[in-house]
Length: 359
Image (cartoon, rainbow, N blue to C red; front, side, top):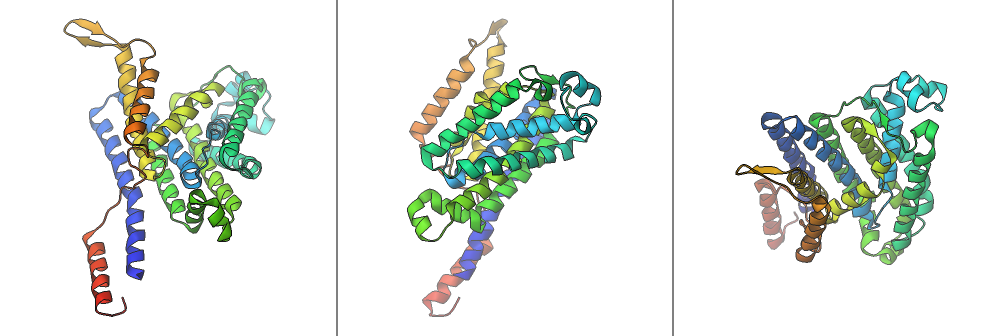
């Protein structure tokens, strides 16, 4: 039994390696054969991977649907902007910042980490109140948190620029930078999911009453999951800002909330592999539809989809996938390696058991 348990753990830890190899292959293909436009698309896709994997850390393990993660994303994005914008730009757009923050001019990497830490701290404070609720009540509370963040950031003119876009962020994020953070988020999510806290949290997802009766502190494990998730979500916000170079509060509201949840549900909310698969599939579909709306030349003519087709076709894709595969494309299963030596180990254990020997 010990050997079988060890082999199961080894197989579980192969999941992030497979997903990382898949993303590395994507970036290599784009680098070798793509143009600048495709490189930007790849970087945005990998930022979405970081976001959706962060969302899965909490939603996939706890079973509580969160509408508030875009709020943590905004917190991380604006924190990074405060630290990386040139003082002259901050004096122009963000005149009410304190002097020490007005003079700060950090590199993007420490600024992104600082944004993640601030988002994690806010996740700790907000989660301390929200996670005392369960089910639909908790989900509605997360949406209320998102509305609060959006309202504050849309009206705090001297600190966030309000509804005016903050421009001039250094465009530091390329496919390789985004890849590094996406892989880091995948490994962190896998480590948490296979930790004692992650296993306990999934037990509460399956049956809250039985988990409580077993002595599992559901509130503590949910809060820990939200804090870790909040950190990587904040980092994804910083990456998005330094990918496009512009920030606006509406970029972190309903649109990105629903598309990230759609990616998670389509891929399969029950597995890390599903989270990554959903991002890659829907991101590819979005890019194809955007180009189709712009039009393509066919036989000397110009054919284009009507404006708005992107949202309609993505919605239809979600409906079809959920009808055919209610649990998502991966049906809650992980991509895992089962090396020959692991299978041989199981066979040896079974033979020993049949002979009456101790494995």
